[in-house]
Image (cartoon, rainbow, N blue to C red; front, side):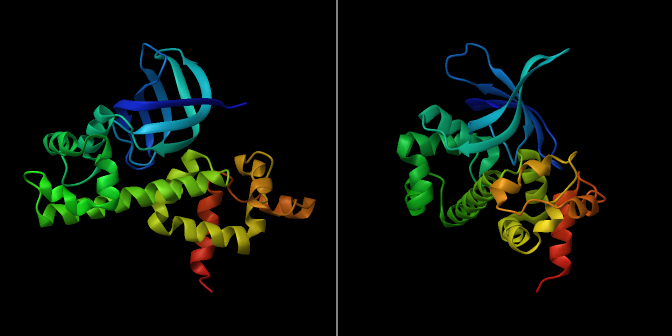
Length: 237
């Protein structure tokens, strides 16, 4: 059974831009020491709050770690968390100095201002029309990433697969994945060794027949989502 853990990223120890594999130090309420979290994340940033499911493990060299299977990214609620979140490089046009100015002006309402009334940022010294447009675009991109990751993981896709899918298909990930669920269910009737065999219930797919499972098992289970999407892309109708 997967364990639950929620905390705020304090720092990124390592991240692989290609597949999202990340080692991060996370502050968890009730724990004095930072928790080492390991998993695949889309554009993780200090200050970001993660609601995670995974397993505790003990690394022979690095000690206790939390290995993430699924996660949901939440925006920080505290003023210090918001400042760290904005100043981490998450949004092009806002660095640590500008983040401090913005948060000093709007405090806990900062993220709501960016989301709903971004024009108000002109009240902050150093923010003009050009920077407003940069912030709007960057915030929309981050919102899209969060929505796609939530959608994929709500259908039982692990954070590792979800990251790989988003890295490949970007903002089109949800669209193509929906087509897979409706038009190509047999693609996912994989062998028992594939982690995807646990997903048909949540996807509403029919139970596999022996012949279908045997045929599907010949596909590489590791790259199953990628193969499915490749078939979809080559058959756009």
